[in-house]
Structures are given as C-alpha cells and as structure tokens.
Length: 633
Image 1 (cartoon, rainbow, N blue to C red):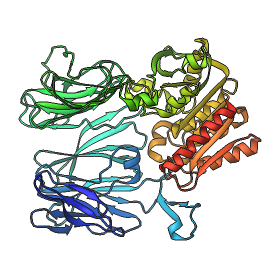
Image 2 (cartoon, rainbow, N blue to C red; image 1 turned 120 degrees about the vertical axis):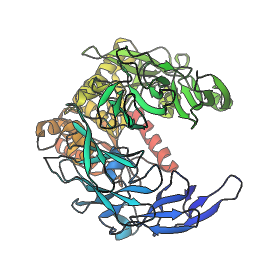
Image 3 (cartoon, rainbow, N blue to C red; image 1 turned 90 degrees about the vertical axis):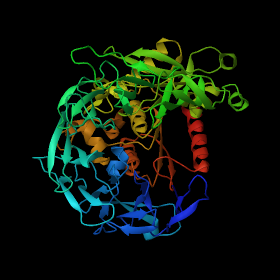
Image 4 (cartoon, helix red, strand yellow; image 1 turned 180 degrees about the vertical axis):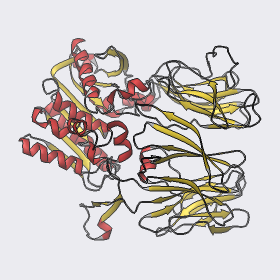
C-alpha cells in the first residue's frame, strides 16, 4: 500500500498497482494504515476517520462532528507530532475489530497568523493560521474514543487531556497501546513533565484504572519501549515491559497486568534506546542501547525473565563492528537486517543471524575508496574527550585542515553547536564524516569542532537535566570550555573562533557569542529561539518550567537579555514562514540589537520554513555563510 498524490495504490506481489482510493487536493487522504489482519484500511479525510474494506472495496466514515477550524478526529495535534514524537491520532486493535482515536479540540487556542510576504498576491492564499500553544498558555483538549471498525457508536474513555485540571493534571496524551484481549492503555503526562501515568481502559464502558505512575523531579522522557506480554512468570495473565530512568539511566522492567513491578531486566550506567523484539517462548528480549559507550549504538539480547535473587546477566551484543547499528528483526525472530555505519565506513546493509549475529548475506555495501568519495576528499573527523568544569567528560569531533596545504596549527576555527536536549551531534557515525559544511570549511583551511555539552542526549538523566530552568548557561559554558581546550592544545587561533548552529543551535550560537565576547569573534544563528516565551508549551515548559513561576529564568535565558555584551559579528538566518520557530524570534532580537546599537546581518528566505529546502535557496545560503565567515573570522 502506497499513498501518492492521486490516492492510495495497492499492489499484490504478482499484480500491477491499483488505485484503490482516489484523493483530491481539496480533500486529501491523510495517514492511511492497514489493519493487522490485512483486510481493511483506515485513513483520515476532512478531519474524520474512515475505514475502507479491501475485500469489497467499500469505504465508510466512522466519526462525525469534526469541523475545519478546530475539531479533528484521528489526527495527532501539532504538539504531539512536533514534540512528543506521536505522529498518529488513531490505533488499530490487535484483532482489527476496533479503532481507538483522538478527538482534538483547538477552539481555545488563539490562531497565530503567518503572512507569505514573498508572494505576489494578497488575501487568504498568502497567509496561514496555526493553533500554536505558546509557553504558559492553554493546550488543545484531547479525548480518546473507541469505535468498531465497521462503524457504530463511539465509546469515550474516561479521559480529557488539556483541560488544565490541577487535581488530575493530565495535560498530554503521549502514547496509546493495545494489548491482547482488546485492553486499551494510554500514557498521560502532567503539565510540568514530572509525572506520567499509564491508564488501562475497559473499551465497553470507558472506565479506567491507573496501573503505573512514574515520577521524576527532573522530567520524564518519553519513549516507545512499552511492550505487551502474553504471559509473565507465576501469573495467570499477561503483563508488559516498561522503561524507566529512575536509576538515572533508561532501563527495562517487567510488570504484571496490574502494573506491579516484578523486577529489572537491565541495569547499569548506560541506557536502553528501543525494544526491537521479544521472544516470549525463549524468554529473550532484544533491544538497542549504549552498553558499549555513548558514541555507539548496538543490538543486544538478555533474559526477559531474570531468575529471582540472581544478579542480572550482562546483555549479549549481537551486532559486530564499532559505530551505529539500526536493526529490524524478522517476524520469526530468526534473523535481523543491520544497517551499520561508522566514521570510517559508509552505511552497509546485511542480513544476520539473531542467534549470534553472524553474517548470512550482504545486501548493500559501498567501500570508502570508491571514486565519488575520493572526489569529495573527505577526511574522517577525530573524536576527543574534554573535561567540563565539574569533571564531566564531554565528547568532541575535530575536522583538521590539511597541514600540507595550510601549514601547522593553530587555525581559524568554527564551532558547530546544537546543545539542546534530545539531540546528540558527536557519535561514531558516517553522518559526521559526510557533514559537508564541516568538510568544506576544513578544505578552506578552517578548523571545525563540534561538541556535545551537558544537556545533550544519550548520556543519562543527570547529564541531560543539567539545563533544567537554565538554558543558555551551562550549555554555553561547556562550549566555552571546548573553545578554551582547543586554544590550550594549540589547535585554534585565539581571537579567531566563531560559532554556527540551527534552531536550538542557532539560539546557543547567539547566546554564546553574547555571553563570552572576549573569546568568540562571530556567529551564524539559524532559526533561533531568542526568547522562550515565544516557543511552544510542551518543549519549553519541560526544560524551563512555566513562565509565571520562573520569570527570572526566562529573562536570563533570553538572547535579548545579553545583547549589551555582544562584540562579535552576528549573522541571523531565518525562513519567514517558519511555523515551528516563528520569524518573530529573529525580529524581536533585531529590535534588541537596534536598541543596543549593535550591528547585525540578516539573511531571510521569504518562502522557506524552519530550514531552507529548495536547492537554490540552500546553495545561496551556504555561499552567504562562507562569505560571512571569510569577512569576520
């Protein structure tokens, strides 16, 4: 099944593609999913949930009452898609008889209008309105309903998220899962991100039971490790696998159907990333994680039901070769596809045994010495360890110019930053080798450095939580530490160090330039969040708290609060129809720079969003960035 602009095409292995369900620009088909038994297809059209019977080619609208402006059925709201990594607004039951779905009501969210200033026309086709919940304001209201896949009445679950009820404080519907026996579960998160509940529903009555509560004073990180089980030891019913960071690192735990924790499955100063498969008959769980270090990602297996009283066994690694492994297990749990790459190896795709990881066959491989790579003159970056002021180890990647062409160090230096939670820049992956801006700058004699400061991902909750209510401070100070290390090593020229970054990285590059004017000469700030009161509720309040309760933190974490200190040159880059980080962030910073009498340069793209997408615009942007670096570094 493939969704194309013309509609949904279905193709059997021996037949030609058949247009099963036509689409239209005025009434597009959105988010189609085939039922588990393969007989039906659910999709959203005109904000309503529909089901299409693939056996008799009949379609039926399942829900009613949506409207174009504020109420939708079966669609994930903006915050869910952008910040929660929940892309879906409906879920098939395992037996294909029911569909759980969301009703989203955004009627209480003021619309934020984005004007298409680059268009030749005016009016409705040159503007767009978004129900964007700014930090401290109301969120959408979300209900969860269940309906038969053949139609009928809706049973609403006893849940309403986003109503601002301080007693229940169930602000966000973050995950929905079905278990066998048509048991429906939902994960709900409170407004301050410090408490998550798992609710179990009776789909016939909508009644609920809280089966698990997770609390952490830092915050709760969402994941997709919830895994239903048919049986658990010494229990007549099933249970589930849950992942928790209660030890400071995300690990797996076994729970019965009522949520009682039966014990840990993994532990240690490393983290589980994803459950990739479970073999209940053999008592084995497969997962990816960082047991071999935070710069690596590997597939492991361990006992699903550890022996009571015994210490946990060290998980067995099934992937071979250092670097990053993305895996897909087959349904028989006999083999897995491994997409493997590293700093010195482009991606290769192999089929491996799930018994011991041994190679069965190779699907795709391209050696690093093929002509197209040789033509690019790529140099593998080197990984270094730097000590933060509190003794924490930070990892950095260094791209050195060719000493034969440009002489020995020190060199003019550009530092790429991101630094925000949920992202890791430095790891053993080919993606860092083919960082073409870094490679281009290196080829021009510029030393390039990137380093993951405290606040970045995959290092545990304490490492990431260092930026709580403190964005733009510890993260910027760690970037200063990295620059000072480069100077001490004789690699970077003092007074010739610049920064560049995008989104949170754009924010951090501008913030670091303003806070440490004696060290940094220039910065390129792409689509920056310049003041956190102008970003969305979910992301901002998780890391900064509520604006009404943390006014000083919001003030001190705003770039505008520090512009008086700025001495270096600043280039601001932003798309004017950015619906994520609105252009007003850059406009507000420009106002502050003007008020402070500080020079700035502005590169705008009237028809681009959060990142320029057109090749023409990307090329133009890179040319302007290089020209700025030449003049100001």
